[in-house]
Length: 80
Length: 245
Image 1 (tube, one colour):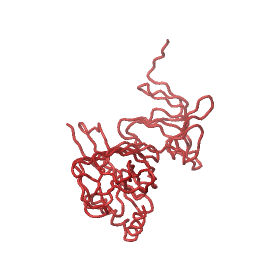
Image 2 (cartoon, helix red, strand yellow):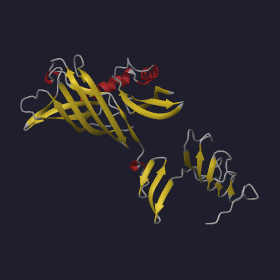
Image 3 (cartoon, chains in turn brown, red):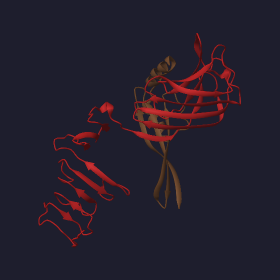
Image 4 (cartoon, one colour):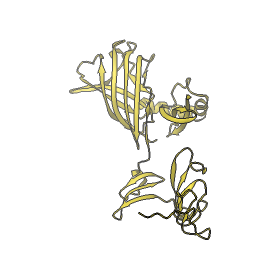
């Protein structure tokens, strides 16, 4: 029997502005044995819309994306 | 070729030098093997910090799934031990905690430490007003060390007509380390500003791509919503950027 599941198998906090890098793995198994794994990635910056993120990522964002970090990133964002 | 067949050849003591297991595939050069999971060992044992190389198969608590692992442990003084591959007494390849290094190099900065392929979802954003939309998007990436190669397309874009709203692509697969004007882009059905003849992508350290129109003897200007021909404009682009991930 083939099954497919998608999990967030890697969540990293990167750099000065605490960007959150999320890797989702889509895993296909045949009779419980993994036969395929593919990745989808995205990065969440302090000014990103996180409404579509998982509860875990939202919780991390709430902790690391403080107003101070958001303000600092906004200054850098406008510079670019 | 002659063969000697026997049920078992073993040293008389536990610290004997050669052991052939019951099924004939196990060889230990120095000390006893883990009976069920370890089938090659050259020195030391798996609970000490002595330098040694061992091959494991699934079920030992170190290796999961159907695979074999070759493990290199420390030298007993807390120093990590590299796996080295030499030819003619010259080091060609080394694998240590930094990654893969070549030709005797020991610098962590020169270690190849990551390779990954996958997909990402390029998403349009505007610096002001509402974000543009597209009928379809696709993107893939290959990361080699600190370089991320991206390729993407955004088709049938619809945007407002706000010339103050610069178009950006966000949702990059890895965090950008610093600005890089390195994205080649092909646009279908966009309106150029007078005097501008080409568009390239500028990858920002703030994790987005801005497209700049440039021409001879004029300053560049960013692609904005007013340059999009609604419903028919497309972006095809590929390039690379640096990441600290």
